[in-house]
Image (cartoon, rainbow, N blue to C red; front, side, top):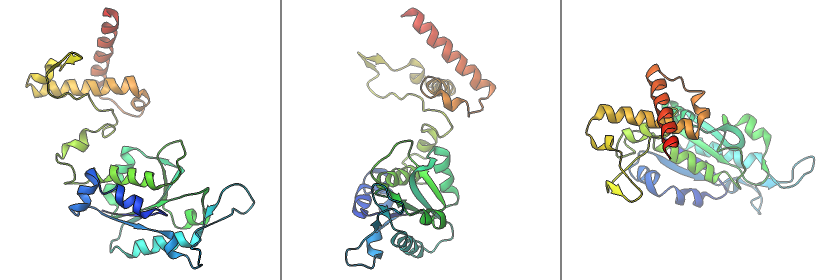
Length: 253
């Protein structure tokens, strides 16, 4: 997988991506990362990448040609078939785990366009971009942070990136549910003890407990996810068991 980021601040992207899981994946050549500055594709002495919007209004709009030329250079830099150009925009599809997972299946080169100012020329979106993605229903100053989120989230899903191949599979949202709670040493604290089931060594019961906790947490914190998740009969039973335990705990407090 090769990531290309079109950005007015390429150093910001390269430097931030050099840490943690993403940095290690780049170092191990599991993924590649390049950044392309639209200013390098301008033709005037001021290296102008933006202009006032037609029809008036506040702010500036990024121009078509520098962005288009930067994307062309990015595409030509990689000899692969499956390329996708994504504009990071508050008007795009809201990112979720399923969308990110689908990228790992059929995309060899992911080109992420980081907008700035008031936006970018609509003709670029219509003719160059394959999709628009959004972090959520809010505005940030530019697409660089969104690009870094996408790079990190996709990278951790790739084979050989995480130390344990099951880590990504157990993450929140990987199966449409929030993740179960985790505990580590010491076994006992003033703030509470590790649940006894996790100390039992009974892997079947531990798996059952974790599934029940994942279902319960999702019900408590993100019940909307359950509407889109078809639970099995066993999962329904575990969720009802969790609810009864919560009710009993409240009565005893």
